Structure formats: structure tokens, C-alpha cells
Image (cartoon, rainbow, N blue to C red):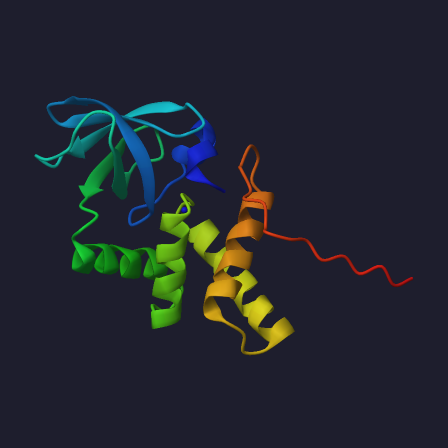
Length: 174
């Protein structure tokens, strides 16, 4: 998921079928939904809205269609529908040209959990960073690698909020 909470108009309209993101539901009308990202951006898109969807609640969305001329069709995804989310993450990884291994599925899930987009651009960047971290430090804790990837992605995104690590380590050698 550049962080879709600060995605901006240009980035939102570049999403491709299979890309996923989180947003807060602002309004529900027949056949469409207005969503709000944490940066305050509002967008209205055609969408099949789940019956349990409520205004003010955060939801997971998957892009079903984008004609790249302003028409985007979204699908709401239930958080508790683990199989459906896994299938959509697999589709997003395939869309990005990445094999849907267990590690890549976990990485995609971590991106969603950290309010990052699961689109081709972000998935490729995240996979590259994870591979680089693994090569740099060897077989370390997968959770640590994913946390580092999330921090690095948020640092490269405008207006993204980066969680402060518990401590910083500085190399003072000259």
C-alpha cells in the first residue's frame, strides 16, 4: 500500500486492478462510496458496499477496475475474511510481478497493517528492501526485516508519519 493515507489525487488514480488499501468510509450511496485517507483526502468511487459497512469505520478496499480517466471501481474486503484477503494479496503480488511466497504474503499483510498501499510500485519497493535487508544482515528475524522495510517506505513518502524506533544507534567512528 507511498502510503495511501497520504496518497494524493495523482497517486489514487494510478492504482491498478488488484491493488489494495485501507481508508475510512465517509459516505455510502447506492453503488458508490466516499472514502477518506488519514491525510484528509476524500474520493468517491463506484463500489459494491458490504452490508455491514458503517460510515466512520475503516475498511479494506481492493481496486477492481481503473480506466485511468477518473473512473475507479472498488470492492470492499472484510477484515475477517482471511481467505479472501489472502487471495487478493496473491492477486496484488501477481499484478506486481512477484511470486506469492509465504514471505511475500506476510510482507503484503504487514504493509496493509501499517496503512501502506499494496500496489505494484510499493510491493516491488518493499520486496527489494526486504531482500536487501536480508542480504545485508543475513538470516535475521523476519519481523525485524519487515519493520525496517515499513520504516524505510514511510521515510520515502511525503507527509508519512514514521514511528519513532525505541532507540537509535549511531556509529561514532571516524
